[in-house]
Image (tube, rainbow, N blue to C red; front, side, top):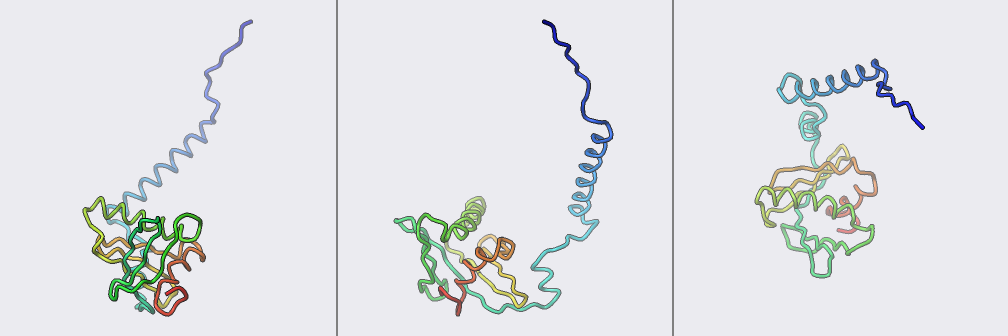
Length: 161
């Protein structure tokens, strides 16, 4: 039994050209922003500054792991306990995920646990967590209302504070 074996290209040439053009366009646009030929858009901190959006509530926080696997959240200014995230389960999973990413960045930059994090609610409703040790900021509104609420509850005057 012999089978014919065909090595012909089964992808239409026009599709390959279109895919290559799309990749080329994406690389060109990325390069123009990186080289400063086009302004970077949608930077929340810049947009808030230009619109003169003021903070509504701010709290500096420290997060520390406990022996039982929970995360203790304290007010960096007063040392008061703000909340405790229990180990396991979905409750606090988002907080743990965000902190894991920020801790990794701290480790890569040689920043220890001393600098606090600043959580800020803005007049426009946005919520930002800034690592004061690395300067990295996380806009928390893009992760869904439940995840945003987990951090908003840590602000003064909110439930859970």
